[in-house]
Length: 229
Image (cartoon, rainbow, N blue to C red; front, top):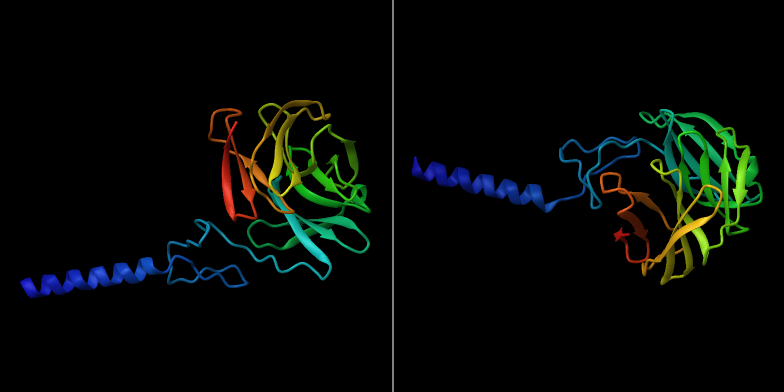
């Protein structure tokens, strides 16, 4: 009996080693997780659900996604002619419900997007330094050029205050975070000291005390920085 217990413990320990040795779940193009790994954990975090997206066409790039009115809105920069398209998708299947060409972005590119419950906010590049608010049909609601250091690369709408949080980039190690009104009046600014590359991106930590912390993606150091405001 004692030998059996020892053998069983060895088996359990061996299974534990095998189970914990692999931390990345296999996800196929259809969005299904490998059934062998029930934790559904990849190297970045827990996978709650995956849906097929597919690569963007040649000379195009995915640049952001927001959840709006029960749909996923996925955005795509197109190189020639320069512009931005928005794909309204079913969040469960990834099926495209409709494609909307954002006419207000003709000749320009988007760096980051957010949804305020009614409209879309875009940090624009080429020409850079412009913040635009667009309706869901792609038409322009408003735009302004904020008095900031560097080029806006990330944008977040604060539901609690109605203000915007904008991340800007001067160089790879000179980045700023601004709080401003929805018309561009700067209220606060911080030099974050974060190192970022061409793209930035951040979201509010909604479970933190109001205005206390934000998260910023460092795509040079491949980390996520939680910034204390």
